[in-house]
Length: 125
Image 1 (tube, one colour):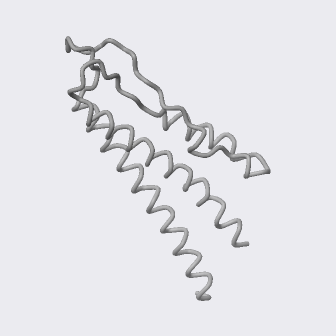
Image 2 (cartoon, rainbow, N blue to C red):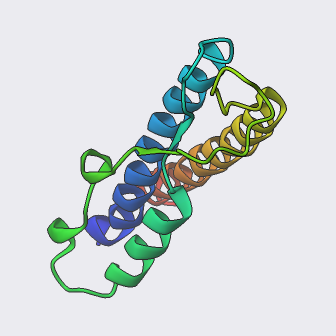
Image 3 (tube, rainbow, N blue to C red):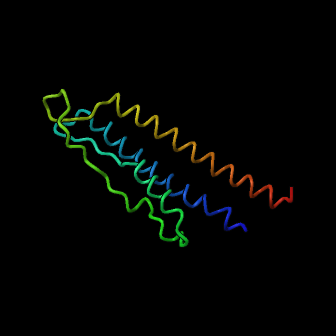
């Protein structure tokens, strides 16, 4: 019974790991905003999350991928207006970081809600 309650939190934990990793990458982009030739990096969180949702229908949940299997993608687009080859847009990075932070705290709140349910069950109420 409790394993069925904890299973969704395992998937949420993996999503939290991805959000944390993405935050590190965004921070690296921001730190290198003035580095000539630096190309921004990212993780496609939505692609990971959607693939996990599709895979959640399989019987063996141990086959779900973790954050360690993610690829960090380098954005080699030359859309930058800068002459030094750096394509980091600080405003865009800050907006992505804010979105990622909201996602992270939403996932934390879901885990807290699940633990509160388990606590209520254990207390018998």
